[in-house]
Length: 278
Ligand SMILES: Nc1ncnc2c1ncn2[C@@H]1O[C@H](COP(=O)(O)OP(=O)(O)OP(=O)(O)O)[C@@H](O)[C@H]1O
Ligand SMILES: [Mg+2]
Image: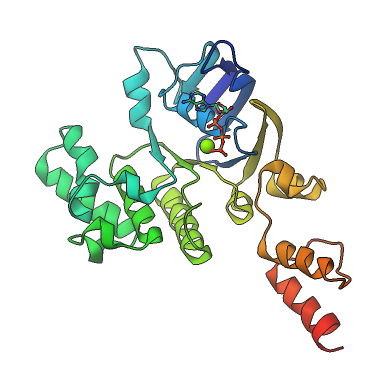
């Protein structure tokens, strides 16, 4: 099978006298895969994302997307294949209404009006925001805003969607909602998804996790592989899940806590049987 994305030994520096933001990074991603990229702040995740859609050209090595090698000649073609959704929903709106906003990218591509109307409706339906088509984007919840931003990308019919911390400003419910939306859209449109995240649930939703550290790819594996290595989640750049934070707080108050990883349900069982019933 031909890979959808093939990164071969790329390096990139923003400034000559500084540590490179990317060093000797290589990996490939198959069509239809969902890959999470994790790592601490400043480890090079966003820089890597920007090389995949040609916002940055690597200094050495090569990037190929959909079989096309990234160069100044192919950059526009590659950018059409890769849709990006960023962190702050408020910085991503240009339209006065939700439907105008989703139509904006299509207008830029010179898509005829009838086709445009159809694509906007389709995309908003896919993210379940059709009812909000004539609303002002500013008046939506964070999760709804991100779903509209996703619709704007989906309407352009990309092959790949890159989410660069797209759920990080949302509450847990908004986060779960956006992840579920991506899962559905990925299946319906046969997309390849890259999600850059500090959220363990989002990382756990991927088929595969790539771990960045100091500009290098230092590990990769299934979520199970990565999480079972006993590596501190914090050193992977992941925020501690709620149950782990609670465990730390109880432990700090002298309450003995189990050493194994507990999800929220496991935490409730343990609290109920070992703490509250005593
Ligand atoms: N526009 C820029 N100009 C100069 N240096 C930059 C620029 N953007 C990023 N860097 C530097 O490049 C390195 C990698 O940054 P990058 O934004 O890729 O990290 P990241 O893994 O996405 O971090 P975060 O989790 O905080 O988003 C960092 O040392 C950062 O300071
Ligand atoms: Mg970043």
